Amino acid sequence: MNTITLTTAQAIVRYLAAQYTIVNGTEVRLFGGGYGIFGHGNVTCLGEALHGNRANLPLYRGQNEQGMGFAAAAYAKYHMRRRMMFCTASAGPGTANLLTSAALAHANRLPMLLLCGDTFLTRLPDPVLQQLEHFGNPTLGVNDAFKAVSRFWDRITHPAQILQSLPAAIATMIDPADCGPAFLGLPQDVQGWTYDYPISFFDQRVHRIRSQAPDVTEISDAIALLKSAKRPMIIAGGGVQYADAVAELTSFAEATGIPVVETIAGRANLLDTHPLNIGPLGVTGSDSANTIAKQADVILAVGTRLQDFTTGSWTAFSHDAKIIGMNVGRHDAAKHMSLTVVGDAKLSLPALGTDYKSPTDWTTRAQAERAKWSAYVAENVKPGNRPNSYAQAIGIVNALCDPRDRVVAAAGGLPAEITANWRTLDIGTVDVEFGFSCMGYEIAGGWGARIAQAESEPGSDTIVFTGDGSYMLMNSDVYSSVLTGKKMIICVLDNGGFAVINKLQNNTGNESFNNLIADTPTAVNQVKVDFEAHAKSMGANAETVSNPAEMAEAFKRAKAAETTSVIVMNVDPYEGWTTEGHTWWEVGTPHISDHAKVRDAHKDWESTRPQQRKGV
Image 1 (cartoon, one colour):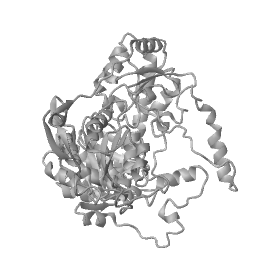
Image 2 (cartoon, rainbow, N blue to C red; image 1 turned 90 degrees about the horizontal axis):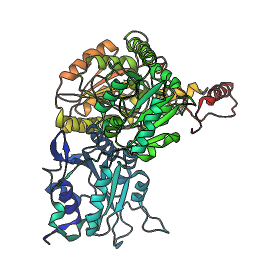
Image 3 (cartoon, rainbow, N blue to C red; image 1 turned 90 degrees about the vertical axis):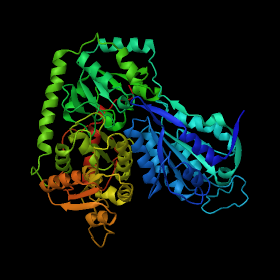
Image 4 (cartoon, rainbow, N blue to C red; image 1 turned 135 degrees about the vertical axis):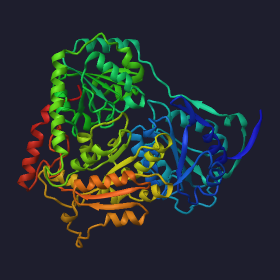
């Protein structure tokens, strides 16, 4: 057997560079590169190895490890999980900063490889700089925290170990059912140790994403249930796009006439104008989708994990409705005692056949509801209908963007506003991160999405919507985008704090407290942030506008610009919200309180609880 002597770090990088996949019929590297911030835990050995492979695996220098992880997640989402990035961080706080982004990737079923420094295996220099000591368990450290947020976790304790660990990590990340982050802890000494690796280990390998066919009996049971339906409905989730099953979904819906509603992750499965697109479902949904969901008797849930914003904390559906869970993941397919079809949507939807037809009056009724919702959205986004709002800004951008432009948002009030008001111009162009609802994803995720988009659609733009709260939390990748020449258009909509949580606070009878800057008792110096000046200091174009008309002109300038542009507009924290389209949502409210408004809100909230399905 022919061998080659390499350090552990050199072998890891060489192996990653040899992994390929097929995208649109072309072989490309599985890893588009990586994101890295070096420290003593990864610079000397892994850094040396990455420098030697910088042409094959470009390394993007991050400003914050959490942002690197968000960028990696957005990159994988853009590529529908067919390509991915790695992140490398130093031992200690650098690695700890990746915990939040690993949790985001885990919740959203997105692949990323985390190559993180670890303490010395020999323990000869213990305790080392930044080592977290547990007195009764010397094996326990910061890296063990990733066990809860990783689909695959390993600590490399010998150079030979990667012969098994690397293929296992990649197999997990490309598995449609188990997809998520993979973590490898790399002790500093082991990174530099050598081993005689088989040369064949580094042969080019082309990975193909598996399509899992459904069980024949499960399909037969699903067909029988569909044929019994008088008011059927399809919920289209993000898994439809990951399975490359948009065409199959569209064909099945058109052949059967079954109305389709979308989850947040499933936005952009169908164009806004498709006659069977009845709108987004759930807490941040549409009156049209929620109206038919309440009446549907059989629900085909395709590629969705049925989280509470989709199900209205399980109040969106009739108690008598039957659910068919079609999902490549058994865990998601079986939720709420669904009739399970465990299989890839691309293979499972055609297997259902098209003998069944939705009753015409039901489909027509659903379309009439959608027409009413479309009219509401058109009025809701219209400039001048009320003080500056998220919806107006969304409408302005939506009207001026190109069909293949990608919109990115997360957390706060913008996911709800985009889900309700954005009119999809092309398939797979919306990234609203609400699986983990993570503030700070917006700009970092936009950077990662733009890196991916530039590889295949350089003429399109990445458009980021962020509030002032998320911008303050994580904005340094404005600088990253400027440094790397990956242009973004960032719309900063300033409502003076965490306005959507202030809204929830008020809606539950509580007084505004500690969310808006103006209502923060400890904020004794009410200074307003100059977001325009801040963005300019990082090399971006930036301007502040006072109304939607000015925003339209600024957006046109941003489209024409060659570098990242930031557009800032104040929006009203109280009157600017989309008021229609919401289902019930379960939040914990005080059962007792000294305040009458809080007591009354609790009674009102609980009065609608009987709508909630109890697991059946």
